[in-house]
Length: 335
Image 1 (cartoon, helix red, strand yellow):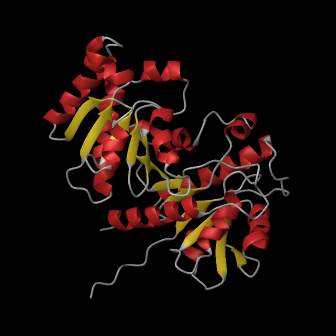
Image 2 (cartoon, one colour):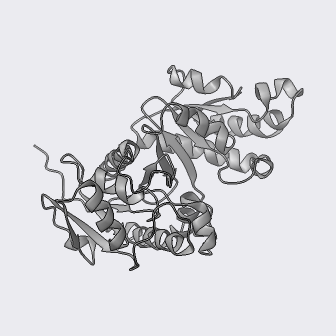
């Protein structure tokens, strides 16, 4: 019998303390069948969430992942910053800064191999902006802090559930900017990352479909030439590299075809084109995976839900799915 070597815990950031992040994180990590997890964030937010959803759980402060000991009824936490308790449901610069600091702490640990991966609870983009953080979301933040850009690499966002996987060519920009950014290099990068991302799920030769940018995938140039001049050449280059990729396919049907089993992943051109099909299938099922990082990172596929924060009713299903997927991916990386 092969015995798996002891792995470091997964780092779970608490997200914006004014949202549901701490609550769903505590719900997820205190499950009896949860993998070994370490919380990262302000202790006041963790304690308040603990009192709300799992009052018998003990929070134990540690200063390093190496000091974590998996103990029934106890969850370890690394304090990324100290602060007072924030009112639920309110956007603030301080809450945005606390969320940012937790991510930076987690990334530093992941880069050093001291945690098995990162699972991030939701952050609020306006709170980040108020705090002066120059990133609109986790994906851009992780791309910068991970060191990927320094080596000439880039990352991509994959949204996944049990029926559908989607990789985005562009993410948190306006639709006008998305059209400008969806150039040949961005297309080829997204296709390559989709290929590698599916292989991380154990799919040896993934079937990749690329969605068109324009209605009906441009209808042979009648509704735009991006499919002819940009997207198809990138597909052909990826095919020449041995990837099983096809398209561009009309965006209004390709996701249905993927869900029916024709494709393993769809490369979508912009944020809403890819996220609407995933989220329509249920926010409790989707997981956000950042492809191209030197470590595993996942997150639930929803936001801070300020309207229900602190009421004890937040559904942790997507966070549980994100932790489960991160655990599976970290095991695969370690063979």
